[in-house]
Image 1 (cartoon, rainbow over the protein chains, first blue to last red):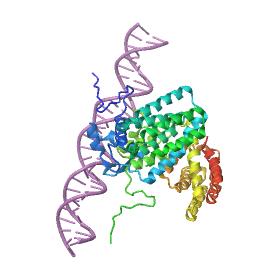
Image 2: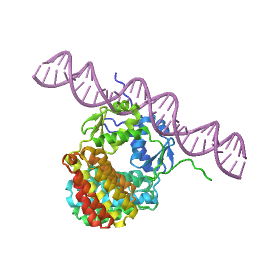
Image 3: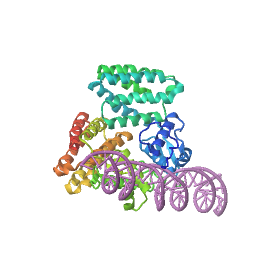
Image 4: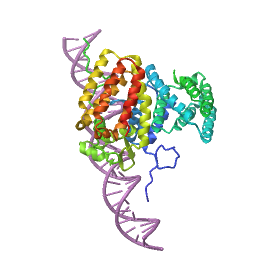
Length: 221
Length: 221
DNA sequence: ACACAATCGATTGTCGATAACCAATCTCTA
DNA sequence: TAGAGATTGGTTATCGACAATCGATTGTGT
């Protein structure tokens, strides 16, 4: 018989063509970065992580390399992979870019108009994000938040722009976002999604851009 | 006297040590993409390229993966790596993004002002690009052109923005840029660099942005 | 006490081999 | 003929192993 090999770590549950071990490793490490399980400034070993996951070094190494390309890790030759530590200047760089790209993207969507169907989909996400806005629920909250924002951007249809924004948002969140929970600002941030969506649906570009601009200030320390 | 080894930060700010085989492979393949030695739509084998280069598959594979992350190649599972074939829609996506990001970046540099020293450096690049603008000299020309534009952007000091722009420009060029040579537009394009630099040095943001906008139209088919 | 050389431990960067996999072709049956 | 199923050819995705390399530690001579 054909020898089925079980994915060692697979919790993915999706029944598409099996993701590569590298892909699984990417999402595992990314989640560890967002949740704070891997701490900024610390160096982690690809081989060590590989044996933790029960796979060989190659796919894990490729995953760490991919995340380094995205600016979430730094390769330290012959030492390991360091989780990036965003300096205030780094934060500022990302913030400036998001102000330019993300705000413009959402503004353009307002110009172009949103179908009722998409509007309802987004409204459901607003609710889900608000419901998830509890400090003991950060990982889930961050995912909902990301989903809502990227879904708006996606309506523009520029896949490269969406990817750029996704990457910038990931960078914003890797060594942060916890100041939100610590200060009880989770709900306050999520509560802004409603007005943003309303402005988007009404096609008021200026309003949605100013609301988005204000909203992004939550991503600053 | 403290005799440091050479931990060495170069002028670029990047640590110097021998490039890894992966890094060498990246620049080799990237050059092959720009020069047209690797053709859009065709699938290439990492292993085959590895034995051509006399190294094992791993570093070459990592290089191809990195270029795939950057959108210059596509991974075709168990088949190889396909050179991206930019559809008109793809070209449009990149063009829109460059209009938003690259034009704004140069405009901001005009606002902030350029030192005489940097101005002279850029002027030399303008000359070098013009001198290289010969159809039999595409590879060199493309490098000079890239150097000039990225040097302007670099003056803003946002490293992430520079990287994004570099990547977008690479995507523009991978499956194109030859329409320029074919139509004898090389010199015409290079000739626009002078006025752009002049506007930049005079601090006229509006002018430099409109010139840059016009200039980018050369990157459309 | 200090600079410098030698050693140590850890981790990568690279290697060569192989099973798994996909697309295309071929074969066989209805 | 048409279509399902087996076969083939070529490539990857993954594995396990090892030398090269780095930072830290220890040792040595002045």
